[in-house]
Amino acid sequence: MESSEKVVAVIMVGGPTKGTRFRPLSFNTPKPLFPLAGQPMVHHPISACKRIPNLAQIFLIGFYEEREFALYVSSLSNELRLPVRYLKEDKPHGSAGGIYYFRDIILEDSPSYIFLLNCDVCCNFPLRDMLEAHKRYGGMGTILVNKVSAESANQFGALVADPVTNELLHYTEKPETFVSDLINCGVYVFTSEIFDYIQDVSIQREGRANLRRVSSFEALQSATRNLPTDFVRLDQDILTPLAGKKRLYTYETMEFWEQIKTPGMSLKCSALYLAQFQLTSPHLLASGNGTKSATIIGDVYIHPSAKVHPTAKIGPNVSISGNVRVAAGVRLISCIILDDVEIMENAVVINSIIGWKSSVGKWSRVQANGDYNDKLGITILGEAVIVEDEVVVTNSIVLPNKTLNLSVLEEIIL
Image (cartoon, rainbow, N blue to C red):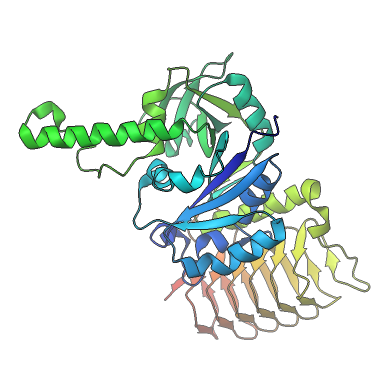
């Protein structure tokens, strides 16, 4: 890569209206800052961006209040020794309109390449390889794609690519019939030409709107008629019309890929990231054999400030956040334990997320069957929930500030 070729990365973080399926965990923490494998969700794509050569800046774009991200962004800039900026949209502009709205800021370093990533995607982010492929193709954009089962393909943007050249030939967002088992992973690299295409969509839409004022011509009553001119969607407005024009190409990942829409999926993705740490950051994984420290099985993250009794048995797939206290004889399997939680003697937690400042009493069990796709497939305790001694909570969701003194099964406790 020539040293003059700068790269910037843009991560779309959405806003408070977007994380509704993530409740009750998104009540007090923006979804992008929810910890997976002990690191905020948005940290995983950011640390992948950090490994791109000649990266000049990282931008986060969303419509959360700036104060919600200020602390995180400033500590991150220091840690990465790289400018990270949060840009707040005044209103949603769509996945392409959002970057266009901030185009002057994004282009201020005159980058040759712009990465665009969605925050709620979990994968190994093969960004360097993707950039190399993008340069070989010589197009305007390259999309990370992945093969999924034919049954689930219609939940995503499905696409057809040339098997030899990898050119994007056809693109449909959430098709009603089967198109292809190749789907859009929500990770892209573009040249700055992308901004010209977004501008064209806006201009055409403005033209159509003006035309409609003068004539009531039926053919103009298209599906896009009610969209504001500055609202541009990357998939329907850019990818679909440009498919088959030798401007867009695909890069297929053979590694894991998931979308983090629900708390259940966050537990699954936490496991995927913990496994990834074996390769990228083994120093983040805990170890112990039950003598001086707890017995650790499989991939486990324990925050340095947590206190874990040496007789506890932890793992696989456990992430323990700051100031957590885990007492003697506790067993933790496949769970996320958030800040300031206390788990008392001989309690068991399986397939669950325990919210901030909650406590689980002695000999109690908080558990679920672990079906990540089922609404009650993992148990979730919201913030400051107290489970008293000898209580069993199974396949349930408990909203914040509740005290449970009786066992519950398959309930949503409001």
